[in-house]
Length: 448
Image (cartoon, rainbow, N blue to C red):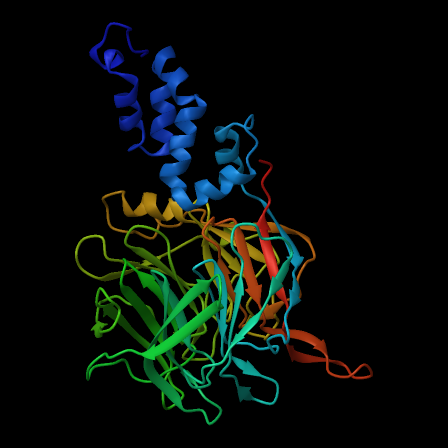
């Protein structure tokens, strides 16, 4: 029934109504708009949709979108485009500098302080790398990036390590060296951009006391909260895949850290080559990897800290929603949170070591609605349509695995570097495997 113009709710001031609307989910907002002309007018205004975009995407994404948005282009249309995103555009970037990073895989690539930071990895000949490279992106990025090599000699060379961004610093853990030795050291790196001295990066070993996770490589990691690092799984000292979960809590000045093992039931089975991605609030998504039996996985887990304690929840989904002929299980892929609160998964390889060049979006809003339902996750409730494959336009990259990818603060641009790709070993020989050294920019296709 339409609300009467004389009811108390219709006499609420518009700014108060706006505050109420901005705490509601999208479907409730549309239902609210159907009650009377006043509410419909408010919920269709450009100012309301701008506020909704800011609520759902955050200030960094909004600032980036404002720079490309034409004044006459409505925020509602932009919100709808991102909600219905179906395509990405790929382009190979032009790289300059006195020298360029060698092709590699299982390295780290992060976006911090306006810069891309590349460290380590494995390269041709089975060798690890110990080099650090920095490229300034900033806000006026074109198509050319200049790599600067940072000479430090630390951390020691490795591949299969993890590196996450906390504040304006990098936190690095573990990895494997040429001799197969697994590491469990923790490092903090700080990037600074100077007008006179260019870009500097300094690494220091973090004091974590006597407790640390067992050495490992090919594990997954991400930052959670403001000063915590989460790691899970990987390959341990004996070559056995691990299934443990650890959290590193850093001091306010990032000079000290305390590791704590998180033991819960249920928890994800042992694996390596998977991904952990924070998706907002107190939630993190784990996807894929290679299991104990060398099988490639497509299970989905959520690490939740919203109720003051740690827990893992498995999210079941219906494979019938995956288009025919497309395989979802993968290892060595990348997974990043993009604007609109979606998880963008790219590449990886399947059980037959076929490398992929596909892009998938995981709908986090469906996960959130399940978690907020107030009932336990049953098999039927959780079989929801989580996945959608995106079309790829432009310079479609080769299928690859064990590459690395990171997103800029706007959530609209994904940078992909390196990985293992199919290629000719020699012009006269059959197809083989090679390391890649390209930097690819993946942009969300928006008409704004």
